Length: 228
Image (cartoon, rainbow, N blue to C red; front, side):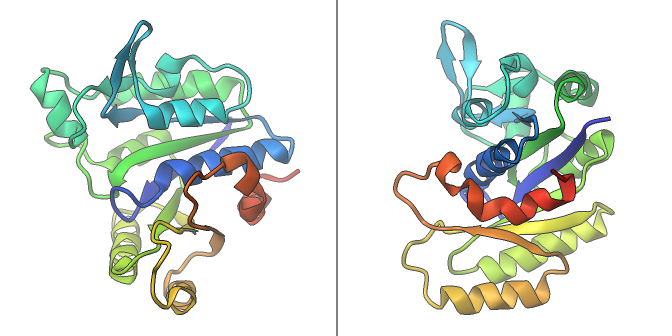
């Protein structure tokens, strides 16, 4: 069975997609066959090939091989709003079985599947569906991406507490430099290292044009659990 991880964030705009793509690049640079998945995405553009999401395409670009877009992103919604609202607007119920089937197809030819969530951990997926339900269905451990900016201590510690309360396994966190001018950045990182009960897997700097391939070495520690 393929190994996999679920990437969540402290909130929308925390740098989750870039971190997930960089993790893919790091895993593939290590000699593993890693593929990305964005099961649910809102804010998609219509193309000749159907609805496409920029975050899902970023994961696809840094995946090994040529996975089918429909497996990488089973649910693609047009409006850039919370996915449970986007789904309700067009009369769609998000079906975990459909996501599980796509995940199984990706897993069949991958050493590692990096699954990116939506928004922050508590963003709903449906009237009675939360992200932890997806994590449980796919049996995934969780990596938290912390957007490094004012307020990140509160957001990250609350998120870590919620992940633990939901019974999911938080195996590490990644710092994401979303604010180039963050005050006391190193002191905040030190506090996060002290108070999050999971290891820091790396810190990604602020960049106007972030390149997952060039930053892959910064997440080398995150790859250790998968060997090679």
